[in-house]
Length: 114
Image (cartoon, rainbow, N blue to C red; front, top):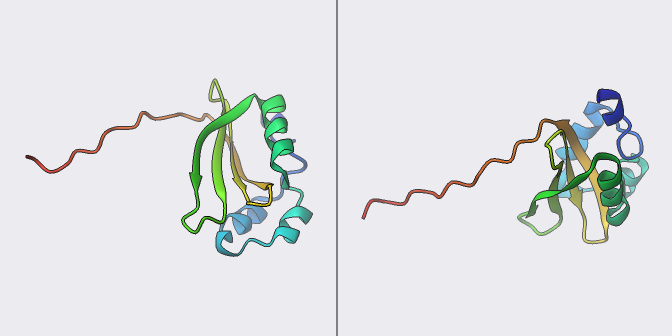
């Protein structure tokens, strides 16, 4: 499976490149991201992940400043997952991929005793 995962979207960059991309949320350089080949139109990226890895959206959240939507896509059996961010212009970029996704049940927070 490791060889299949390494053939991700277009060509996965080095871990250093992914880390650099992941830590530059506040000032995303779209041209650099496109040149990195880890980005593409959201519809194409999601279609590729669904076709190649049977991944569907498992969780979603909006960045505090509203600049991006972050998604975890995972296969139904949890064998693969992808962390993706999408910009308002429709560009989506891979941030991380992995194996053995586990969805945890949400537990209600306990409030102060009445």
